[in-house]
Length: 138
Image (cartoon, rainbow, N blue to C red; front, side, top):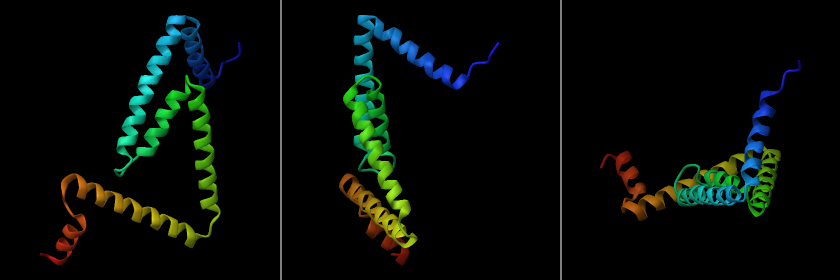
């Protein structure tokens, strides 16, 4: 008796479950509503986290992937995003080391500026002054 592949079986089992839910008109509506709400919660959370250091954009993309389970526009937008992120990544990797270092430095400076501005606007703390005072011992 041939053995089945557990990886493909789990993926096909998930699709079978979604197909069974979609076969029922009430299930189809409930699935669309549930996917829409869950995706919206994840996307809004990611958007709120974008100005902060961390995985804000990654969370937005996960929310888009959740929406892509049920909405064709989200599937197209996810494919567009994936294509452009991969194109950017491949372009950066083809560049000489000094240019990649410069791109990384620009990203680091941008993230530092976002953190500084977020803390300054949110809490009224000037991190540059705090670090300067710490280094000089004032």
